[in-house]
Image 1 (cartoon, rainbow, N blue to C red):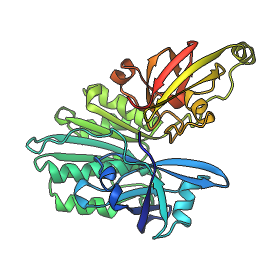
Image 2: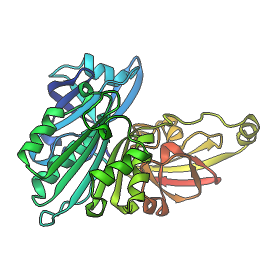
Image 3: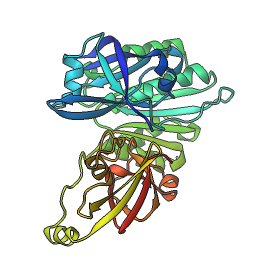
Length: 358
């Protein structure tokens, strides 16, 4: 089970007015644990006024850069992102879990594949890692990136992307779509909606040549893009998602009063295995998640977003039945195999056996 390790901040680069790029260095004994696959993320934790806050940020470095970098865009009212942008300094230390995530496909150096990427705002961070790695390690492959932002000044990694385009001539195509800034080509102005998706495929993108499409951004944008990809012939197995913001940032703490009263009379016996040790406790069937119940019983269960997005809290149900309210992270085959997001699970059966070690 992943555990937190200290990472030294060796460099902080101001990328845009409200975004920074951190270069991080693990201790020598932790170096192997922080080897990453393109498209993965790191989960950080920090104490703010006595409350532990965890946030996940995608790695933006390519596999061949020999370093660990993440991009952090300041979110209005966001404690961690504001602190990282305004207070964090080189030489400081951050606690982080080893890299996680499955937003990638296996590399095949001998194949010539056509990739398509859609990014919204800071959703560019994992895609940048993927683009760098694909161009470097699949020399016959090409990549088309459609990158949506509000305006030119908010484009993260703009110069780096242009450098990559010049370095790999003819293999990287970039389309910038700006919501509030006019461009010479009308197609590249405004939001990405169904009509714009149709126009992109009609005028700019050859859907039949695409092997894999990556999408990372806000949920409404991702759903629109995924629907457009399917309409133009891409199968679900060709489409990879990475959601960085959810329209459901938390979970309902209470159900209807009548159901809450009924649930109060019922409880579930839960056995949770973590790092080889099993603990058994009782929890109410009142809408409390299995993750929250485990933490309340002093188990160091893994988590980050608590929104059903990042999969850090992934576990497997070995016995019993649960209801998973939100799932933006697990594939269908994982759910069929019994895997769940414990932050989104409430017990339905009277006994539940769950393992984080599977």
